[in-house]
Length: 142
Image 1 (cartoon, one colour):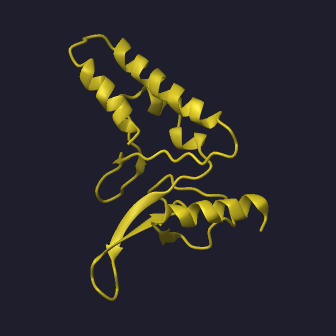
Image 2: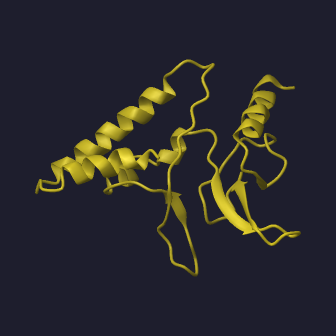
C-alpha cells in the first residue's frame, strides 16, 4: 500500500521534533507518484491506498489516506489520476457472504471517478483484469 511509504518513513523519523520531516515525507511521496505518472504510456500502474473518513460517521467523506497535512493542503492526490476506485462491502444476495465491489463514480461520499462512458455501472466486481480491459476498450474506442 502506497501510504505505507509515508507511514514507514514517519515511523523511522518519529524521534525528530521538526515539522520539516512531514514536508520531506510529503515531497518523497509526491516524487513517487509523479514518477509513476511520467512512465511509458503502455504501462498500467495501480496505486493502492487506504481511504480515510474526514467527515463523520453520519456524513462520511472519504479521501486517500496520507501522513501529515501537506499533501492534503497542497495537492489533491486523487486529482493526479484519471481512474479512482473505492471498495465497498455488501452481502451476496444468494449466500449472504461478504461481496466486495468497487465504486466507479462518486456517490457524494468518495472521490471515486472514471471517465464518462468507461464503466456502465456504479459498482463493479473487484477484478483488475476487467478494469484493464474496460480502460483499454475505452481508450481505443472499441
